[in-house]
Image: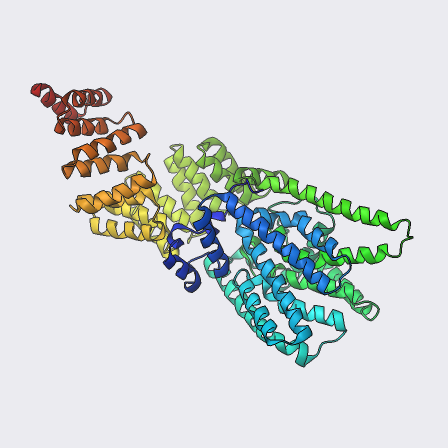
Length: 633
């Protein structure tokens, strides 16, 4: 697992360039929207990790494994404190269970492992406070709970979970001793949940027809999800990164069987509570911890599926120990000669789960492997087809990318993302008019799709339709003001139109968001050079070639600026580097020849002039320079 790479939205969580400074750390805490979700402790940890191991995925994976191990150890201590039977088995089942693989193998879900460790530590300290009533323990527990909320707001369920635990232990709740101390926690949790729900709507995009379930539909989702999650814990077969999205139809009475069965089960457990409170407490902990993911609150993944393994990571820590305890209590009733076999069976179960987890983690090796594994389990996963298409396009496999994008659209015709991916691939294939039609389809479905506007702008700019391109770049930025690529592309359009001041402004805004964009640095240098600000231009070109030494245009323009400044020797070096990246550039051979001629190296200059003419017989400048160089001999 540690050797796996980055997948899907990891780049939205691993600290982006604009946030890697101390000011970026300030933005993480005090600028909602600077990160995908307002989880500042999580993103502060990512910030620290980036300073330690940069872009090496292994470091992030190792941290996730360590946090999961810490959560399992804290769970063991909590179970032992509560005197739950076989606490080691309960913690081991959680540590080894394959439904946890997604949370541990997916770097973005470090919010799960981090928040779970803080959640369990807070619970341990609160139980110490409950025993001793020491203000120090209460303050420390409250601080840990707040940190958990700042890592992931699903931990808002902790105060309710503690009330269930206290009721299970005592059989009743005291308003003064049990409920009152947890009221501030309930308020903190409600505030964190409200912020997260707002961010999901406004920043992540959990709005639209895909989320219009109605009250009845949400109860159907909740009931079915509960049974789904329980089934995956008891029999973890067919695990997938994206599960099929259920069709929810409140007009079908059969669909209400799921919530009805869940309600009946809770009623049955309530009926036997005087005989044993454990099963009801376990069910309440499981359902209550899952509540934020049961469909009553919109979360972005619902557009693909109503369930996901990482949604039940924390809930698994509640139910698996209860299952282990129930089995242990049952095993005590077995004849003494058979009991050792029960212990061996428990060990075998943990080993089997660990083996399944190891196999499940293999799917997270890289993005291509993940999407192919997802499609193998869920062929109709349109999101997986689209993301696979985007990866294939990045690899230059244009025809395969087109096929996958069309498959995505077959399963979800009103899928703006796949229309954009297909358009990008068609444009790469030289089918400009078809690409424009696909971009138009994407924007018809989702008029505010910033990526569609940006990429359509690129297509129009390539076709010379500069004013139209500018309009689409501006539309992209109206939806997503921090869209670095759109700022850079708008700068390109302004540069082509000769609107140099506006181009410089847009390049600066792009670099504020992504200082490591080599192309934006290079193009800013070009705009500054055209404004006569040669010294600043040289600095931009130098930054660009530092970021990407193979960026031939930046090497060439740096050489031009240095030559203009009378620094011929340095110019020669950068022209040579440009030719390493693009050896067949007539213009660079000509410029290098001129720099060599200026440095008195006429024989070498003549060779490059001849090469320039051979590559482009119409290069009149090279012909004149060659004639001039020959006349000097």
